[in-house]
Image (cartoon, rainbow, N blue to C red):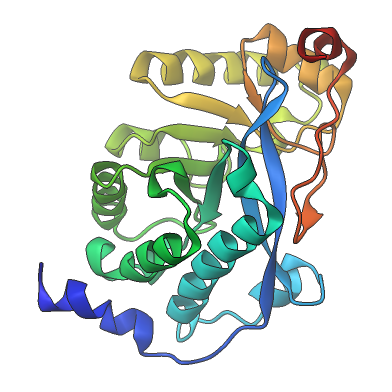
Length: 259
């Protein structure tokens, strides 16, 4: 173990700004069992204000501290909300540019998981980039390191911006989350349906699990189920719960199966 790993990442500790944050949790539902497969931690202000207000205060100078504090808040908040009473995983968003060294920058996360009693093999780390990644090799190293440590990894907002097939060709995560804009109105759009169906086939060939996010209507849900998507996230099933794990409302097709 290097001195950097033992001490934690100096870059992550260089900014001591404290963010006044809490987490909301939204389930990613295994619709074949009717239970949450995972809960995604979504940053909020400590009083429940939206993510946009919090993210507006994140800068290149403080994003390292922000990323670390989000990880801590996600784990501690999920445990306080009762996730240990379930078998669900915890999905945490992270900023690739806030990770100097994958092994060093993960130390606070590991320490928090140990102190909270949360099994690290139930952690999933998902990332997205609104702008093109300058160093995809660095992101690949993060993904590979996390995989070796037993974490799940996911590409968020897949099919939007730069989170697409080109990125998937460079490295493969355990999960891809189909962007909601690709899903919206899929029941009325043959091109959207064909694109999603093609992505699903590619993912299956690569051994990657597909998650559909942002599902708001029964029509969208029905198309995704017909295409074989098992893991679904969105307002149709559950809205995010602030500091709590919300209950899941299943479409009628599954109620009898899980009653």
